Length: 340
Image 1: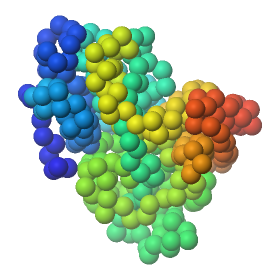
Image 2 (image 1 turned 90 degrees about the horizontal axis):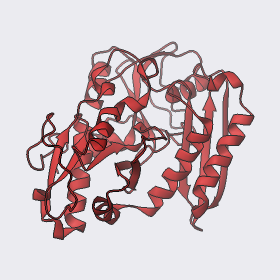
Image 3 (image 1 turned 90 degrees about the vertical axis):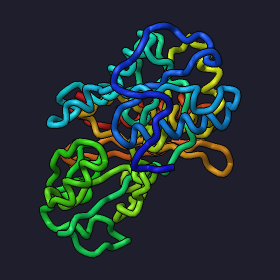
Image 4 (image 1 turned 30 degrees about the vertical axis):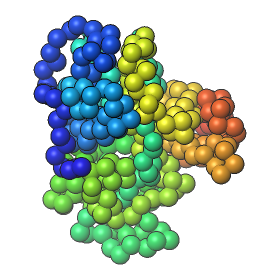
């Protein structure tokens, strides 16, 4: 697989052709919606190759049409997500295409999806989780790495680029002397700004670096207890129309139960907190050796002046309850202004 140049599956492009329904995926190509970034295209390729392998009756790559959809979140790069409507803008146009039956399903980074969807659309499939941790990528002005203190290499007052208030809050909680600047765009754009010296360092999801084949760009991989990941980080999620039984019957072949349990717990916690892109929230669930699910949650102020972290565990089948209970506890013991 060439990570730098994802391969198209049938003609793809920004135009969405046709509006007729595809009632039987065996009779017509399945139309898949995706954002246009290299990582989004690559993740879509991962999904389609997995479907081709596990559902040989579909007819291989010829069974799919890839449709690249430009979203508002991709189009507006000069402002923070919280200022323009939140991370739901990464899926708005894609889900409109689903409701209008111009595509049959859509591929997303799960961490970019809000917890609620328009009626008729659901999160119907979660792929096996990649590494959920965050990575710190250092520029030339940083010092030597100390494994015992991952932020010690950052000079006093250094400017760190990130678009995530979750990362910002945890970083400033650990190092209040640092400055944080908003950096948006795809992975390559952010790394380019770091190489140009615009920032001393940046933070990215390790999963994206791995899928793009550039994991070696990670200077430090951060422990999830020190930098709690975003809910759904490292998971590819698929949305579709909830009444499209033919498509759902295909997607079930690539659904991963462990990823689904983790995603259910993390997103239930997020929903209970009713957090926005202005609210620093982290959630990380994992299955233990005994089959139980362990969930860590974090809420904070964006400036790092307050940070609360707690954990809860229980049976994996109770993932939604575990997430909701942990979210309720975090909300009860946090200042009200955090969720304003």
